[in-house]
Amino acid sequence: MRAVVLTEFGGPEVLRFADIPVPQPDAEEVLVAVRATALNRADLMQRMGLYPNPSPVEHDVPGLEFAGVVTAIGSRVREHAVGDAVMGIVSGGGYAEYLVVHERQAMRVPSNISVNDAAAIPEVFITAWDALVVQGGLTSGRIALVHAGASGVGTAAIQICKAIGARVVVTCSTGKVQACKNLGADLVVDYSTQDFVEEVKKFTNGKGVDTILDVIGGDYVDRNIASLALKGCIVQVGTMAGPPPAMNLGGLMFKRARLVGTVLRARPLDEKIAISQRFAAEMLPLFSTGALKPVIDSRYEFSDIAVAHEHMAKNANAGKIVIDISR
Image (tube, rainbow, N blue to C red; front, side):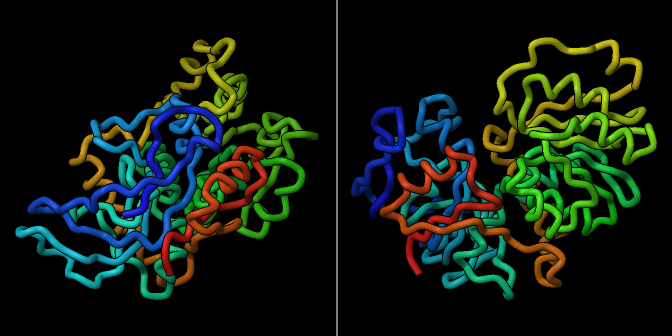
């Protein structure tokens, strides 16, 4: 099969194709003919040698999510059959024509969404929902602050907040303000001209927000603490700006708040299965009703994956970048 295999680290030019064997499913796995995958910031980090696959693999194939069709099943598989349209998260392997995944990690593609478009769902929607709701405690009537509101995780987070009846403040650059408003954000802060700490204070009448989803890090950490309500929670899912130069632990303590660090890729299989199953039960029905939808910025052919990486590196996307492997 055709796959992108990393044999060295560096820029997009190291994304080279190779012909490798089609993987064979174990007893509880399904073999999926991948229709599409989608880019994540972690893919760029892995390409540069900064975020290796946590599981030992013979071929280092990037790609953390997929959508496709089941073509073979293991002897103990009961939840899926050949021909099922499925999607899901993986530790790697999405940049390939075939992959294997545990049957309970594969979620059914909603009937009103095309298989290729479904590749824009798993990683960002599970990440946003897990961070905001499962770990961050966001519920109806509360307020969230989401940084990088026009990113894949950000666009998913806005929709999830609105779907559960929460209000949401987002930060983004000037050119992406309208995209965030169109998705239903209650307040959009242009970080190039506005201070989100002050804007949050005004929006909440000084109370602060209940849950913060942050992919930035850096000096946002102290500013997040300043924006937080009593007993609030900051969930750190990325550090695009690097580590914080300092941290106001006293402020965190005074507010009796929590700072939670989380990643999805490095979790053991049983945890990935559990979060996938819970997401499928609680959130997938909202795609069928239209309350949630994949937000696709652009799509590229598999052969143009290096160009897609360049597009993401420019931070030009609003929503997901989909790679069509087959149609």
